[in-house]
Image 1 (cartoon, one colour):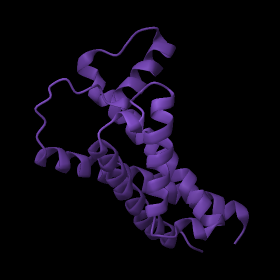
Image 2: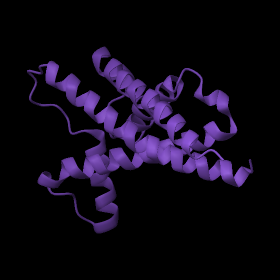
Image 3: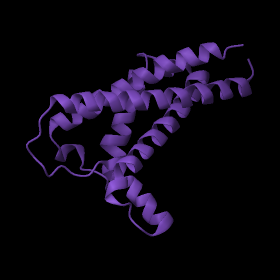
Image 4: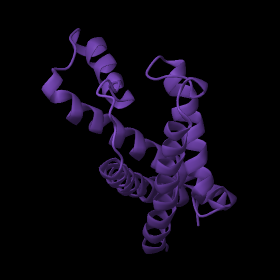
Length: 163
């Protein structure tokens, strides 16, 4: 199989996997939220909504209206998930060892690099040592769902695209 074919297969399989995995992660988080109670009404704005606001300020010079923030945050969530899925799909085509652990390594890496590193580094959230352990565990659990779903879907799509 040519490198161009592998690249295209990884891109398509990864994009689909990233979208489905983002949905699965979203549903996992909704399910967990339904079973947890939070007496603290001062929860901070999600990092995805803060990121959407930052993009809007750069592009339009204005913040996003409060009513539009949840949709804007979801747009950031899915765009990032699809982008990560594409990267993972391409890497998996050329370095199959990257799929070891059935995508869980990918999930742990995304949680560590994004939630624990990049989000605090750019001011969209608190550093991991300044948050409750439950917040960090929730992040890792969510990204394990993302990683495993990415691999499950990527494998299925890639198999249908095999020559």
